[in-house]
Length: 175
Image (cartoon, helix red, strand yellow):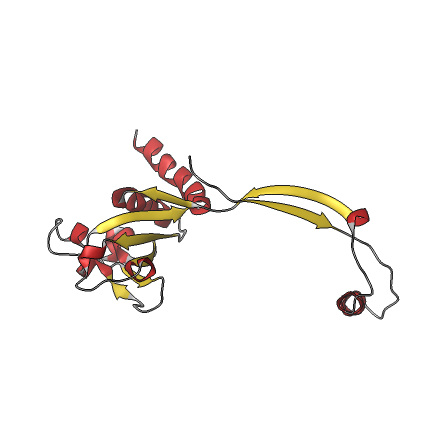
């Protein structure tokens, strides 16, 4: 079993009437009065309820993330994912955030062949290693030898949901 975060969003709404010179002035007056505590919303002002699944990490193999990146780029969308490299890829110990790199589909490696080149730029999540050409270090790009080894890849669930239909459409077109 996995754990998931679900947001409970309750909406309170109250309509107040003010005299003003313009709609913008009316809004300003109400904002100012609210910030001073002149308007307090409570359970009587309840107007709605939603349950939202918070985005969560979706693990996937590197080749699957690459396929999703390429599908997004073909649809002129830019999406992002994360690559975590194994601790033994480095000469000294690094925390997970230092070994995790955010990567965008907007890299030559994931765009059409007409772009030329195969660069993959990424930045470590802890901010200590910004804008690194990862393909120069990655074992996956060096035939599995002498490079940083991938521990895991992941994308956020909302990005996967946005991108998977693009990949499916490409696969359906190829059939």
